[in-house]
Length: 195
Image 1 (tube, rainbow, N blue to C red):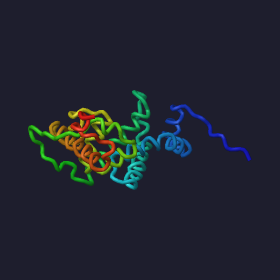
Image 2 (tube, one colour; image 1 turned 135 degrees about the horizontal axis):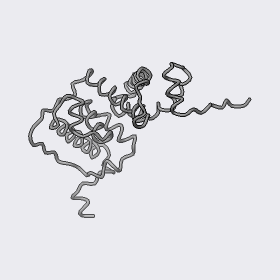
Image 3 (cartoon, rainbow, N blue to C red; image 1 turned 60 degrees about the horizontal axis):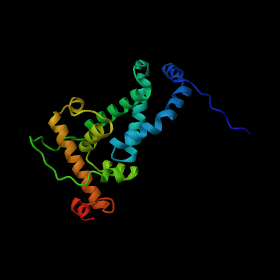
Image 4 (cartoon, one colour; image 1 turned 90 degrees about the vertical axis):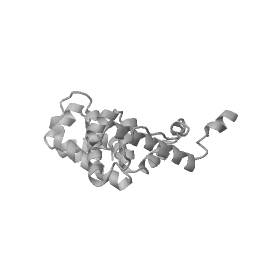
């Protein structure tokens, strides 16, 4: 028995099919983008099942709003923005994101900046997921998504200073966790100098 050949559609055909509510096109869109969007959800969720919920909620929003896509940029970027916004909205409702008070001058002792680059992707994902939702959200928005502190402040309803202090604390906590849990990756600056 021969394997079924999946038809290939252009992005515009896929979008048009989803606008009409055709299940076949919705399924194709889901299979095309679900893996990448699940990675986005995992970065904001604290556990796998929460990421699965975010994935489903995100695709519901994509299908509900797909007619609003105006081809002004990449379609994948438009979908990604929906997933990021959905994740932020979800965790703003569920958790108190901002436990650290803003102060004028925050100083944290930083560990080896290269340690994060040396980690395997899955190890880093686990460490990011272990952060509180507030630290995790701001870390993801700034470091991974590339938003400025001003944009993050507007999205989350906080000041730029709060965003900066949350990011500094998140980085510090991640680097501390690396030093504690993965000492073979972390090299203290004084040890490095003596090598």
